[in-house]
Length: 79
Ligand SMILES: [Zn+2]
Image (cartoon, rainbow, N blue to C red; front, side, top):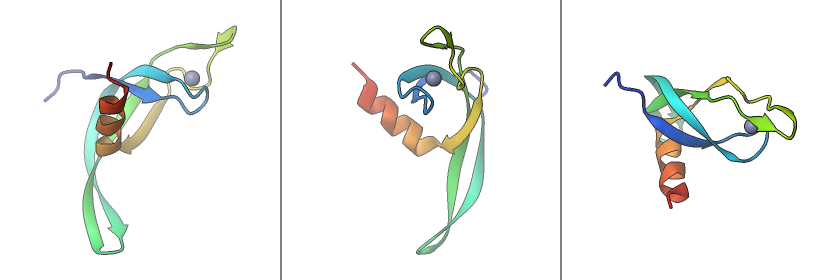
């Protein structure tokens, strides 16, 4: 499971879906209404991209988000 997965994520700085790849994954405990759940979190690196004439602030950033959400968003954006 060490292969790089190309995915798309909505860059929150420019609100456009951008190509990213998953750097690593880890299970974290999430304290919810029904006790503690294990949630698979993914560290995702956003590839360099422009916002207008300049590099977007999201360029080369690594963000952490639930893997579930990433996969769902990718399903939605598939064309
Ligand atoms: Zn961006």
